[in-house]
Image (cartoon, rainbow, N blue to C red; front, side, top):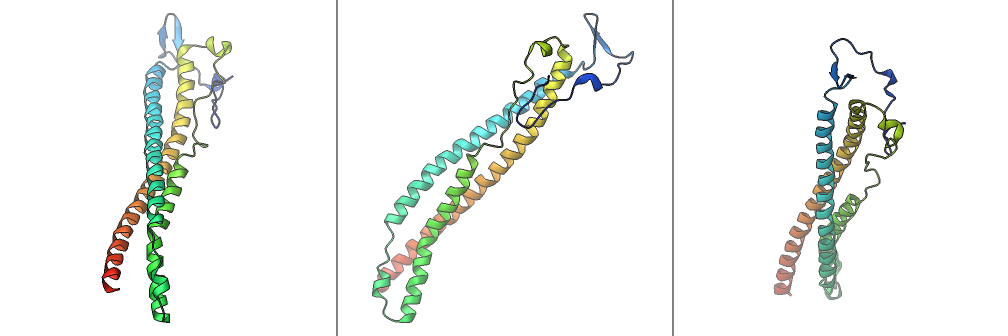
Length: 200
């Protein structure tokens, strides 16, 4: 049997090359992978880094989801489309519709940002080390061989999780960008409303 996760498995060690006379010896046993414990410890540290990175991104995304929802609710309640009622000519209607579209821009950008943050919380493609190989048969093997198998499993899992985290980071940056656009749009809308109130 072998250690497995949802996407990863390890081949049987029977295909490993024959040891030569330079192989290490410990307690009378030949060590095929004398550095496997060092490799396992190092790659477990990398696994922990990716897991911590995932938690950090998702925690920040959760905070911004709540903030985006609050901003959408606050902004939409402050929208005022009375300018459409005051329009009488086709040119005034065109200007009023244009202003209404500008008024809606912050809401649209906030919704796009919110959509990106929600996608970050999708962890379906995130892998972990499975428990398939933790049995009596595996416990009878040399520790260096087991360590090497685990190292290969961790390596495959980390490659997948790193790619997932990179995608999450890109979505987070995209959400932040749309939030900045939304805030700039709110400032522009506020200035336009002040100018319109002075004119009318």
